Length: 631
Image (cartoon, rainbow, N blue to C red; front, side, top):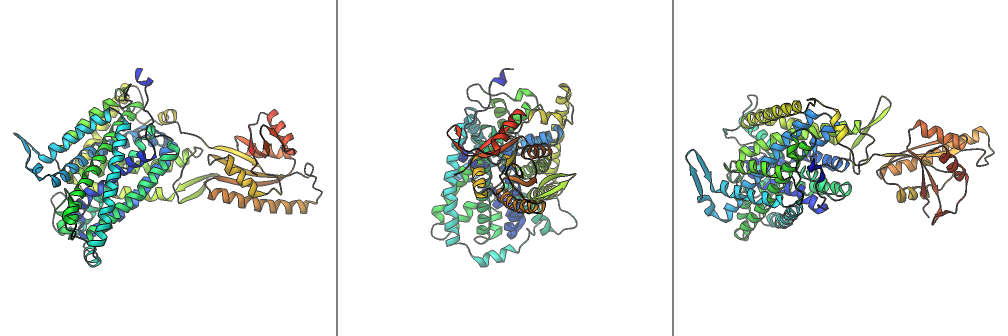
């Protein structure tokens, strides 16, 4: 097929990757502040803090999985390999809803802040019998049309556009926060409002639970919407196939995005609660930050338009990442036979997925027209949270299923369990992320009647499309083989048996390892005490004593290597050198035997028992690695 001749082009650097992650998430606070406060009341900072727990796990999970499996598609790719094709489709289809809504939601928000700068936009309207289109809807649709054109001609231009917007937005955000805490923030106001858990007023769109009072129901509803301020970091993964050196830049971009977004969201939520009455903020869901800044003493009237500009550009950047994410996700689902392959069409010149850009960009444009932010935010959470649940399940499963896959970076806080004689590394953060996202998704289902109906209707339609398509190509609905065959990890770990001479200077060994072997090597340190080769004339008790001391020293070295990110083990054997190496290599299923030697240019200047061992290993066709000894 002709489409196979063209692939996505790697044109995104580390800052472009960060800008996509931050650009999609960083703008969320400009919408979420007003919407969350409308429901959560003065305790909105607490709602943001709870949602932040899930966000940290989500962001770091993408930082681990995206460089290990650097495909466009994100969670649907990970679940395709780790779980099965049906779960992969459900997660991809759910996030597709998220991306389409991201396009429209943030385009509407951009138009809302533009209205703050140019109030005449509010007077614009189009009336077509039963259809009423406001000025915000008109402007939002126009902005989406421009983004579709920009993305059509290349991700390089789109990424550069996002980077520029993010830089401007970050600078202005910093100015807002510094001036706000210096001029307006009041601790008494903050503590007075933080205890108000939920809006006490009955609000029509909330599906109230009978065992909670009105305020508690509203707070929980606000909590689910607070998650919308943290949705979007998966854009980093969607562009993995177009990122230069993904094994290095994606983890850096993901970690930087997590830190920056957390600092931004928490700082803004605390500032608003200590600067403005929550009732006034709740009335300003279209432009809450600008309204807050307008109340700054002395500089408020000057800063408010500047804030509106920052919010406008960041929301526009977020809408743009939605265009990128939706098009790459759907194209990837076409590539992996979850949707018709017709969708995976890469333009020969622009190297962009033009069909999905036009199709889903148009859907996002249409959704802009009503301009209803609360409803869009509800649906936004439904799809994203379902995708995040699958993300956490995929990470946990792939840690077990693909334990031999090289991960350039791993989430911190892990425990090792021995299951059926095999060490399995379990991520505590992934477990926390799974529990928190599941609870939040259940709350969305219970408290958001409109999102519940529309969300499950979206899933139902998608499953029908998926089932019909899979039957048309004679593929099973629940397919575990496709992921194993088509999703190939970036690299596998290589198990190396590293020979360490007894009484060797271990600091030299450590330096030699750090200079020659990276963390993709699983290193098993082995010292062989051979009484004949090394001329040791000693009793059995003395040899055992030497073994014990050597084992302690090797284990200390192994612990130091583990602290540096290596997977390292140690063992000491008394016996004949070649036979001991062979036994250990077979028992531990190593891929190669590594020998440390001093080397001058191409010639070895160090002779010893390893030279004879090297010749014998080569005769037996055992892969051998020569590690240059550190001086």
